[in-house]
Length: 459
Image (cartoon, rainbow, N blue to C red; front, side, top):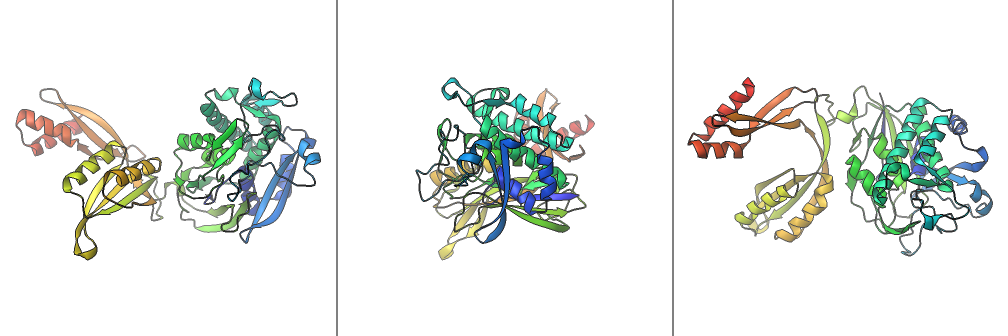
């Protein structure tokens, strides 16, 4: 099985992902020949591929210039790629002059309204984009992937602007740019024969971006919508620029079979680096692609690298803080509130702290999307001065609830754990339901547990 790991520690955009494919061995001439089969006028765009360095790392830089830019930007060689970073040292320096470049947004996507209807601007809707893809003489796999990415992107933009996906319009100049990015990626992905993709947690960046609809916060709203829909994990960074573009997010959330760290790969075959436009001095603005072979599916790998087809692997965040001046009552209350706020689990471990004082280690497990809220709660509601945070993976069974009734029609919920094949691993009566029944009947709690399990097994 051919495995791809997209390592996006510093960000991702359409041009960076294309560059990573080429750097990892995508045959350039074959890929360019397939690009010509896209149902677009050949004179409407130009693709250039350069060898560049980003913080001393040799990378591939892919640029797409549309027809208007051939004449106007030939001397300056300004790429209007989606991933046009903001200079962190100049807070008011925006990506591009929106009016000069036909009001292209940060994602090359816009909503056509009367106020944005310039005489020289035309727009393509989602149906027109998919028609172009359908009429292109490329492989079925590439068509399917490209259409899926565009549909996901249109859904996200539509959600942000409160309209259906089929009413989202891609500005003509930007649409050509986005078509080459997305369809070009789908072609390269298919040519490389990738069967499974794992994607690292994604950085979001900070700051603002100027779009056709005004100044928006980073990450762009469409990126947040894409990550929310796909439950993609993120990582906290302090970069004051756009790390992840909507096009990059749409591609990655579509191809990701799983998220996490580099899986166990039996043989690494190639590595490629795709460069963004922004070239900082203190970190490489690149997306790394690692290609390898595995006899087993890494999307079901556990955290220690072993493989399994029975259980799923999921990303979780661990929050920790040490406390030596908080009463047991407040600790108990804090754990209860954390669970109500969405924590997956909380537990307290006795520990010996500095100066020989006894204390407690409070640990919280949560989904990545909940981590910031729960960290803030710990800082505001306890005496801690700091909370540690790290992301890990856990192998977990699927869970469901069933309800049985004991004598007197008292309902008892049963928590059932099963594997991905539907086999029941274990079942446990819900403590609170059993406790209520024990109080009502006067029967021992342990007997209630046994009755509930017996009835469940008979059922």
